[in-house]
Length: 513
Image (tube, rainbow, N blue to C red; front, side):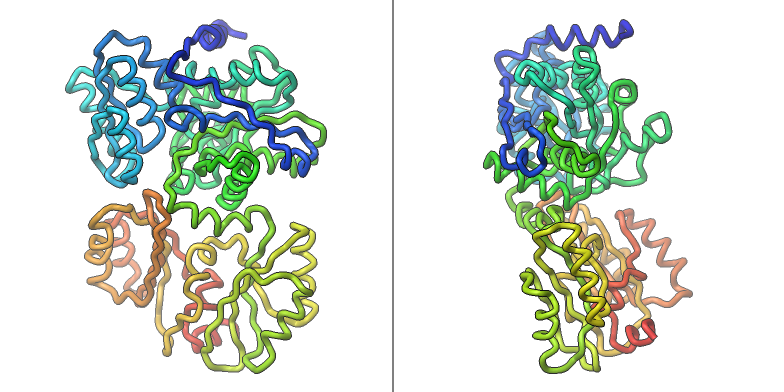
């Protein structure tokens, strides 16, 4: 071990987290252990006073400052609460800059902990830039959320506790955003037990560590998703990556549905409700076990946080069955005649129908959107697909189709009576007053909006589906307006769900021949 890493190891050993930071429990997940044929442990950082491990890094940083320091940071969540509570406990003044899109529950939590909240910008980068300028102007001390030695050392105390609590460990799974928790835990674990595998886990929509590993250096992602907002970081830190590159054995990337399934697993085993980023590590552990067919190992995951907006539970519940592979979604073509639905149900062989969407639209065929319950996972899914094909049904498996899961399942039956030249886009709207008006002023005044669907999921960004009537010659001008709007979007015009469920029958018939 080089001197620099030895310094980290010693600092983690010596870090005094008392009295503010609690030693959290390690829970045995007995049901999941039996299912996966491995001993599964969960390090319960949801038990901290701010319901997140972020308190550790903030407290370790702030406890070394002179009395009555002015600390400044930018955060939309757990780091903000950790800084606010630590500052109040140690007698410092804390100013936290948060994007205006931050959910009110998090803003109020920081204020209740004694932090001075400044709302600025519509995303983290804008808030962070403002915070750094404010810190310099007021001669404050900036507290980074992850790329800082003292913060990394504080997060590393999670591993110190875990190693004291568990005699046998084969692998540890750690969620990754900016990399502070992974860096601190990895350097400590590998210093004591090089044989224990340290595995970083990221969400598919914000896999900045995986991208850095591939390039050999930190790289900035073009965009990140908002579901697991606690780890939604575009670029991993320089120092955290240096340590992760040396001490992290591998990276596992998990989907939104897999994260939702892990939230359910945690609730069933512990009755704790993890935030999406808090369940990421367990989702990675489950996926790793499935890929490696491991048995008889002692595996631990970090439940990193439980700051969840209650209204997000509906969204999580809707996606859990898909993540657990206990449900599949299909788009199926059936005959538009009496008895067709009954015949289709008989083809399912007694499997439960979890969802069924249909509306009469004329013609000889009907497009149905159906959810089917599964008990045998991937093997049963393949059996069901083969059964549908053998019985002559044209179908599409939509279980991994984001457009279908976010919008189509709530919109089936909405077809225009005539053929239209349409373009379909899926947007992420910032959740703040005026966002919709800006959208309409930028795009709605120039082009006819032919379709619009939005549902609030309790996140900083809303999912919006919109259709626009425009011909090919109008596309360059439309692209200019999209760029000026500045909202993250994905073109779904060629998505099979669009033609199957939302376009006119004339247009659908023309496309399928």
